[in-house]
Amino acid sequence: MAKRGKAALYAAALAAYAFLYVPLVIVVLFSFSASRLGTQWAGFTLGWYVMLLHDADMLHAAWNSLVIALAASLAAIVFGTLAALATHKYRLRFLPVLVLAPLSTPDILQGVSLLVFFVLLNVSLGLRSIMLAHTSFCIAYVAIVVSSRLAGMDPSLVEAARDLGASPWKGFWLVTLPLLVPGILAGGLLAFTMSIDDFVITFFTAGAGTSTLPLRIYTMIKVAVTPEVNAVSTLLMALTLVLVISISRLAPQALKGMG
Image 1 (cartoon, rainbow, N blue to C red):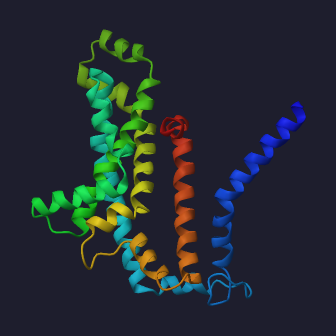
Image 2: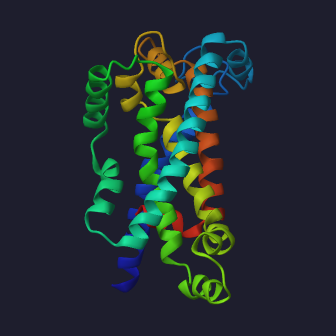
Image 3: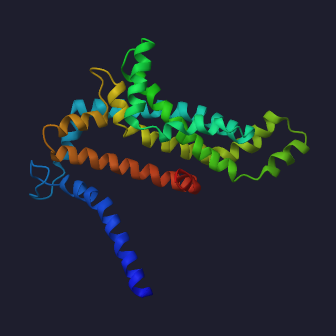
């Protein structure tokens, strides 16, 4: 019975992972197909990746996504780290709720509310509004990763620095901050990952004439799933995978903290 139960567990796990990853493998596979149809195999080619390099609209959208993700992640690093320090130091019940609320808020609700907010403040919709919108939810990702790093720190190290005559600021700068750097970098990479592939919130806050990579892909698949869409999706998956691996190396507890 134990062996049967173990075999059933492995079979269920295999089926779950196949459901998650087989579609991704199919996208990668057909990005190298010579057929103009995105779901047919007609021989190996790198032509669709070459075509991407000459697609001005796609390159412009990718550049916009990189700029937005970089700006949002840098801002989130600053405010998210400060938020994590505040929640760790003051232990007020409402602070974690305020900081982490964007993680539990449905994207469509957040997108609509940010759109209404920008309209009320007369903020023109475009790259600036997208950056502000992405920063609003990226802060939570940085805060939760840095908070997990703070929870694992030994408080006696800071106390020892204070006993040796270090001021609170000097103790933070020389002891706390260096210990937090891996968590801060991991949080920034996670925020960058969440920003660069965000669609729903970007859709509501982009405005007319502004394009990002997810919006561009959405525009293309409304006509048909072409090998070019498969190629750009493969590159986006590769970038995301590299960032996730980097996060897991910098702060192994960060992804656990996300659970």
